[in-house]
Amino acid sequence: MRAKASEELVTNSKAFYHYEILEKIEAGILLVGTEVKSLRQHGGNLSDSYVIIQDYAAILKNASIAPYRFGNIHNHAERRDRKLLLHKKELLRLKQTVEPKGLTLVPLSLYLKGGYVKVALGIAKGKRSFDKRESIKEREHKTHIARALKREHE
View 1 (cartoon, rainbow, N blue to C red):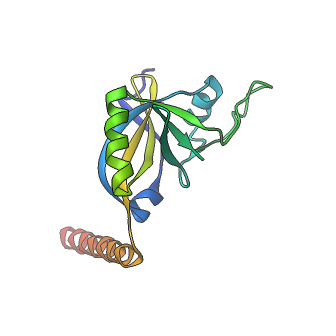
View 2 (tube, rainbow, N blue to C red):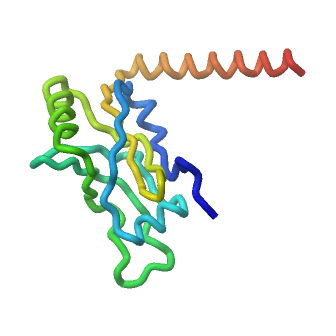
């Protein structure tokens, strides 16, 4: 059985609530075997994670990948730092974009692409509380419209 072209494993739903996503980037991630197996069983969480760039390397911090159920003594640590795989030019561009403007690199999702686990990163700007209330109003308005249209077509 072949996997789909792009199968989403874990999403960071809080990222779209707390941040305004300005740009999306795809990166590879360095994982051990038990982490990949655990992710395939949807055993991950990105809610409090973030990305830092140090020494020409992007590092995913505070991401939780649950220990593999059938793992042995060689199972992975749940909240370890994981290196992201990006080209040097991409890293330099990200560093120049993020640091001076006070932006943040936030992981949006982990997904399978061609058998490899990839990370969707977002260059994000933090929302203030009134921005969050505005996004809640927009979402409620959209659901209200969708329900009205659904009732109309029935």
